[in-house]
Image 1 (spheres, one colour):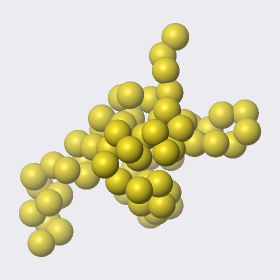
Image 2 (image 1 turned 135 degrees about the horizontal axis):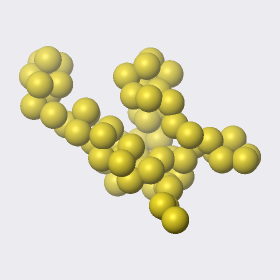
Image 3 (image 1 turned 45 degrees about the horizontal axis):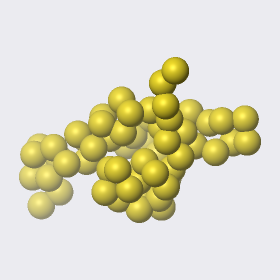
Length: 65
């Protein structure tokens, strides 16, 4: 069974705040997170790695400056 992480756990692993993850999702910069039965966001290890790669890739960093 694949584990998933709540938004606080995912944010900590990625190195951003929970509000940043929510904002990026709302702005369409990252895919919508899956939701559990209570509506809480859940992130797979693959999603966390993809978000980390997107946020901290050299191309994105250079584009922001």
